[in-house]
Length: 274
Image 1 (cartoon, rainbow, N blue to C red):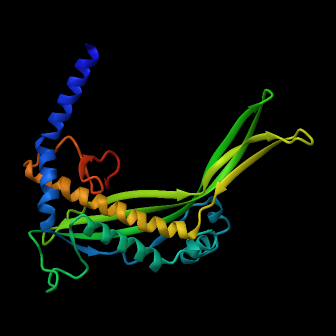
Image 2: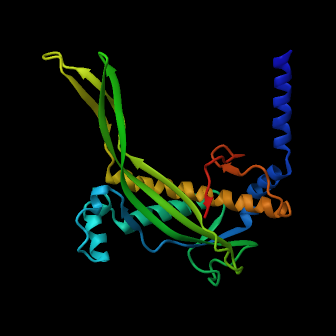
Image 3: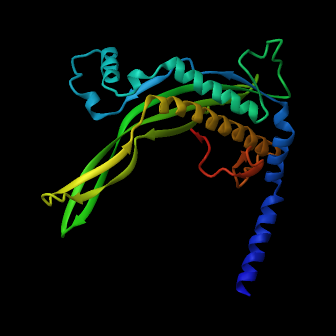
């Protein structure tokens, strides 16, 4: 009987959640309001690059700030090879493509453009800053063998993208609120451990990695362009819910999964506010 009660309670909870006013408003945004929404996009004009590796700060005391930045960039494996224009083009194009796939109109021209007049709900989205950071992820592989502890440091090369967006309604004062997101990619550790050599019995460390490449970094630009477009859509949807609940903050921040056609809790997959 207990498990039957649990099933009934769970079913009722799901039904209440599905019928909640905030969820109904989110569904209304997807089905109707989003089709009356325009985005006037101001893309990032440059790509900031930062070397966070410890060696990047060695022997820079006698250099000017500009020379220090150049020296740090020269000591990177990937940042010095990343083309700003190629990265930004792939990021911005993927961002716009995803917003359009979600049903929004995206304009690079201003609202005065004949080809892109404002719709009922129009927003200005500014890519305030995009920054690539190169760093090292240090792991420690540890194993007990014959009552002895063996350790090996493993350094994985990594690149992270840090993005700041400003989203404001058209012809309204700026909120001065920045929306932030970050993600990273790195070498992929496929296998790691200790073993004993057959010929002399020595304990040796082995590992197998799939290295980070420049092409993977450009692929990250496209993947995160789409991801942050989804975050943008979710932000607009949840602000729509908030406004129509008469500024009563709902308990759930929603995500629209366009592949499933479903509204679901976003969890941590969202912008943070700075």
